[in-house]
Length: 197
Image (cartoon, rainbow, N blue to C red):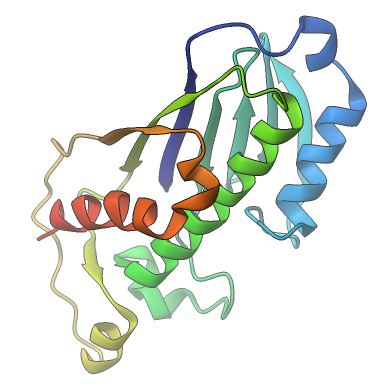
């Protein structure tokens, strides 16, 4: 799973508790995650929108989730399965992390986060963002591009079981989430890849 958290600053309450309970907000987040330009969740699986403590949660069984806090933080848990082909063996049963899939998930999540922040904080009280990314469950996985995967044939070299991979973290101006998304993705993706070298 790709774990991505985006926290805004200066730290403050952006959404009131009553706004978090609004069915319209939950439904809008769910619709964007399933059918919008930034599809993050698998449309073939059911999804649930619910409050989890003070947070609004859009979640799928054994799938991804999106969490929104009153302070405007957005946390993602995204599957790294190849949902386009649905071919579990294309990732050697989950033993491979395909770089292009990570890039696509980052692109979609950052686009989704930008749209969500515009929706909940249109006056841009949150001026800066802290972003952290981590691949969970990747202790024995190997990182490859699609081209490397194709050239491997039926062989696979397992990872060495590194459990001490630290999250990648950066701080940016909020505008970079919309205007400098491609370099931002690279600034997250490259250090993640290095952890699997």
